[in-house]
Length: 173
Image (cartoon, rainbow, N blue to C red; front, top):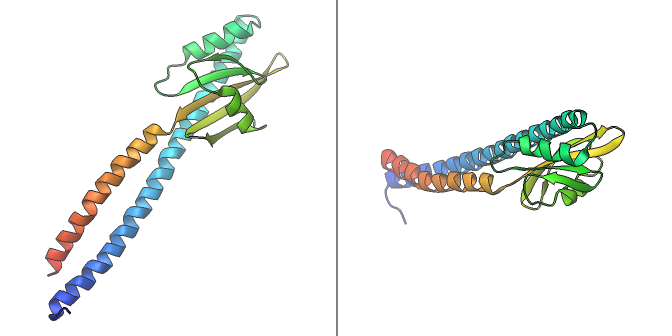
């Protein structure tokens, strides 16, 4: 049993601060996680809309050559990690890299423009009609980058929390 009032008060102080700091870090982590996914979604929606606009422009320039227009639109996109594809109906016409664009389009349903999660990937779709035909532009990016950033934040929090509590305990005693 702890005998001195000073030590008991310090332990209570540390317990309260541990709960407070743990709640604060958990809240900050949740906000940061949602913000990172939201920023990724905004980027993917923008990429899908850009690919759709490029495709429509290329269709006008090529006088309706779907394959050439889709290839040119996808090639003009400057992407780092994301992948973009143009689909005619449910069939992929051109893609910036290998991924299941048709499966992502099926997962999106009938939404004209949206972002969503498929497996460990975030995706966005932008549907359009060109010369009476249905097309879709899809942008997708794995969540690996977001997960790596969040792992670094978790590591920093797990290192900082005990240090902050040790300093608070030393200052309270």
